[in-house]
Length: 398
Image (cartoon, rainbow, N blue to C red; front, side, top):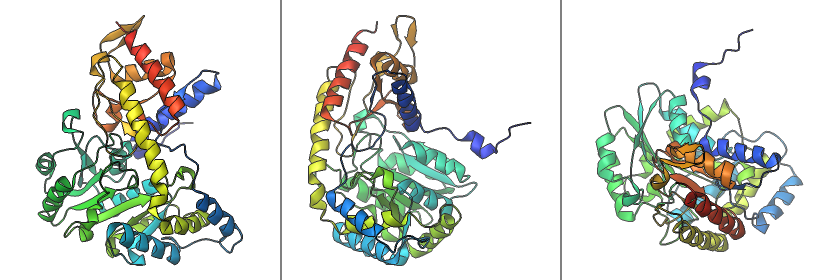
């Protein structure tokens, strides 16, 4: 019997981050000592008030199907958070609660993008943006940047990529995979560009809002004229260390939010009811409570930058947020280890996994040629050991 899948499903690539995490688990199951720096998953325990809220919610009555777009009081709490932290006044009808920020982004893309539409993506970019646009029938248009530009795509280059077919622009700041943060001046320049194109909308992925090391996070929708042009995406995974709870949310003009809710209604319906009750506690929490985790990430960033400086030929910038470093590793390409000839960054990535026991992600997946992504969302001990292994493995190349 023929095993035939759809053209769309057959064209989708497994995310490089998930591939490397899966491969790491396989090697560990075989008894190999692997330090996994591939996934962006905080190793911190959730805040205590999260667990308390979950226990309280289990007593009920939150055991039936929730509304597709989220409980009204959850959306109200999200609105209060936006006003308190970002100076944005949304109504509950403009908010949709989803099963993770990934679904929120997919909802927005499916609501706004169709065949023939183009989506501009400043790069390096999160791996999933590209495939989600393709799944919607649109054409992703990555706009590249370099380490020398601190991995912040110049707005002039973004402007040059816009055509009459451009429907959407997607970006994250702080950025996955680079940790770079757009400056206030750059965001203002980008807002002016969006204002000049009346049919162009923005998905602003702000999932790393609470992990900014200097200054304050600027919500793109807070810039003049941008609230009506922006779909703001956020969630609990990164700032609250709740990756497994799968809570994301978006806020947008009401007509877009309603379209996103219709899309979600045909996929997952409402998000997990207990996790939604926990969301209220997270939205009402003082953001200052997250400062210790942010301080941990800052310390780890500096540890990693210092360690990578000892790797022969590798070059780094200094990330301003999130928990990633994106070193340029081109100096290691073309070298050999025994019979292995490392001609590509994927070759180098697999060499470090199989020979050094360190799992990184090939930068090509993020439209960052010549790089590897390292997540430092793990312990100092593991990071120190991984950096020593990397430096030794690279020093052995010839």
